[in-house]
Image (tube, rainbow, N blue to C red; front, side, top):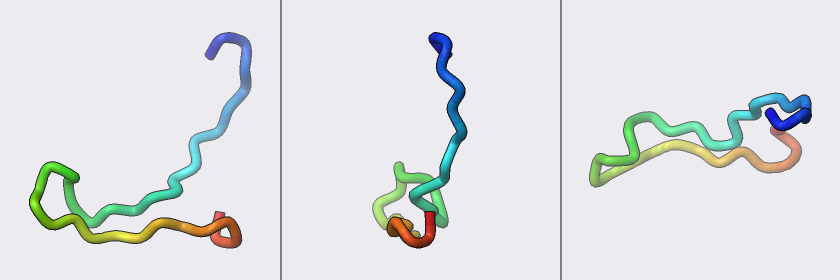
Length: 33
């Protein structure tokens, strides 16, 4: 993209779609990344 080499990192793990009223999951901290 625009001459940059990048890697995708999943920093947020949701158990369902964010359109639902209740969304559960975890946000990874710097040590887990």
